[in-house]
Amino acid sequence: KNKRISKGKKGGKKKTVDPFSKKDWYDVKAPSIFNVRTVGKTLVSRTQGTKIASEGLKHRVFEINLADLQADEDQSYRKIRLRAEDVQGRNVLTNFWGMNFTTDKLRSLVRKWQTLIEAHVDVKTTDNYMLRMFCIGFTKRRPNQVKRTCYAQSSQIRQIRRKMREIMINQATSCDLKELVQKFIPEMIGKEIEKATSNIYPLQNVFIRKVKILKAPKFDLGKLMEACQEPSPHSVHGDYSEDVGVKVDKPADETMAEGETELVGA
Image 1 (cartoon, helix red, strand yellow):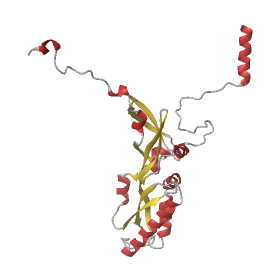
Image 2 (cartoon, one colour; image 1 turned 90 degrees about the vertical axis):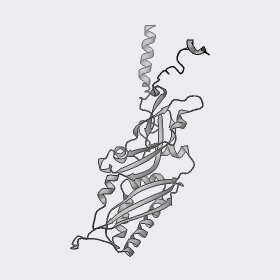
Image 3 (cartoon, one colour; image 1 turned 180 degrees about the vertical axis):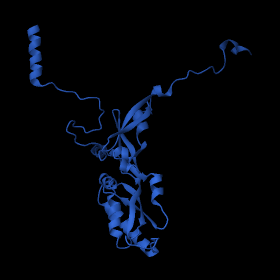
Image 4 (cartoon, helix red, strand yellow; image 1 turned 60 degrees about the vertical axis):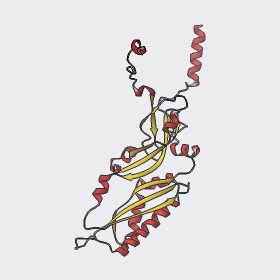
């Protein structure tokens, strides 16, 4: 009956272990299309038994402001999503996984006395990524307009929407994901839509406001290495390797001289 008396309290105090002592930091590397390559760090539990650290990192999605990726504050209204595809050493290699606008930018565009026109389309790039692209645009007052409002007729809206879809499909289906992202950054597609629709109704603030990746092709390490690598003059392996210093070979004549001095000493 009283067997437990000597054993002390049942469920005695557990030792509190700092959870961070079992975790490792990894560097997140962005694809080479962006100016800034090391975008941050991420935590993961160390490999233990069958739980492998690199498996816990794969397919994590990081949301990063384009201003940080391009080191350009004018791009701060765009958020880029990057997905971890592979782990090499202490580096997590990522690939583009979507784009969005910050809420404040979207709200600042919407005003009274104008028409908002939106269109979306599902497209497939040449390297088999299925994307859904969302476009937004607003009607613009003519330079010498007296009337306060600039509303487009519903037939004009339909024409503009058709034009938006056409241009988005043409632009996306003719290139791979890397080239398409390079079109998103300077907003080339928005400018083209603006130009093409000016004869229907002049537009302003035309943007690809959101890009979703619906379906990605099977993981290809070669493609990812290509996306994450840029031929830098200093290293053969591009920029994704950890910046821990480079092994420097001594010039031949220096090593010779060193050898000679050693011989003399001996």
